[in-house]
Amino acid sequence: MKATTMALRASSVARTAKRRPWRVIWRLRWRMYVMLLPGFLLLAIFHYYPIWGIGIAFVEYNPVKGLLGSKFVGLYQFQRFLTTPSFPQLLRNTLVIAIGKIITGQLASLIFALALNEVRVVSYKRIVQTLTTLPNFLSWTIVGGILIIVLSGSGFVNRGIAVLGLPPVRFLSNPRVFPFTLIFSETWKGFGWGAVIYLAALTAINPELYEAAAVDGAGRWTRLLRITLPGIQPTIILLSCLSLGGILNAGFEQILVLVNPVVYSTGDVLDTYVYRVGLLQAEWSLGTAVGLLRGVVGLVLIELSWWLAGKFANYRIF
Image 1: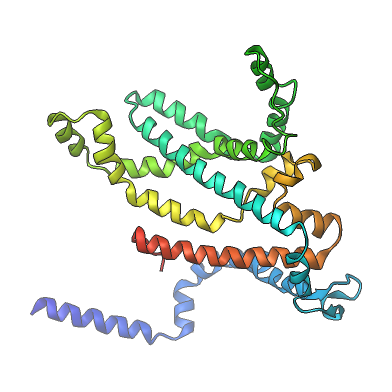
Image 2: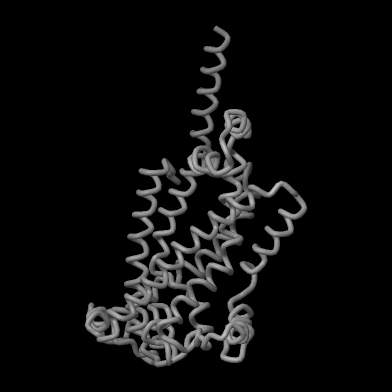
């Protein structure tokens, strides 16, 4: 009886709260709305207002006449890009580099997390995790400059290769080698940070499972296959699914720092093409069209990744 009375009272309070006019809610919670105001302004200025610029993709943009005064051309800029001879090459380079980064990044982060989880010396474990996470916080301007020095013909890596009696490798000027340079340098920079999520997932596994398996005579390899990997399987599936949203994001900053005309055949991607055509060559309409096309495809892939994450990892944000 008492529980029923409390439930009715709570329901009455909820109905009363719903009937509150806006001025009452504002008087009670105006501080919270004021705190939201700076974030809302930033979102409106830097995210919503620039949406107006999408219209540049559908006109022959003239900066003197402005967007409304420019000639409307419909889907001409999209057709122009899709029929250009460089489109297949740009798409292939973007997919190869992006997919390579996703696969190697996920594998490196997972393997590193599994290896670090086996370390029992806490101080050593923290030092290693800190040192491997640090490169993620460095900009590609700094990391790219270091790579250019280290991977050059007279750099540290090629000097080591020469000591072994092998010919030097042109990491940044050989079109066949350059995509692998991008993939593995991105993996080196981010695998420590990517392992953080896997390490968090590993802490959720019940330690008693390992103790029981050890009592039954299971070795370290068997415990890894039978307990550790199944325990973090939902996390692996979730991160793999969510990574699909960035399949057209090959890494603009990294490629912009390291690319050169010699390796355009394998290193030029959609982002660098938009930068070069839209800004350097002042083809604003074409650059906007390519960026919009990439954004639409990315949105579809993000929706697909959310669906796959919900289906195979039971993860939903809504």
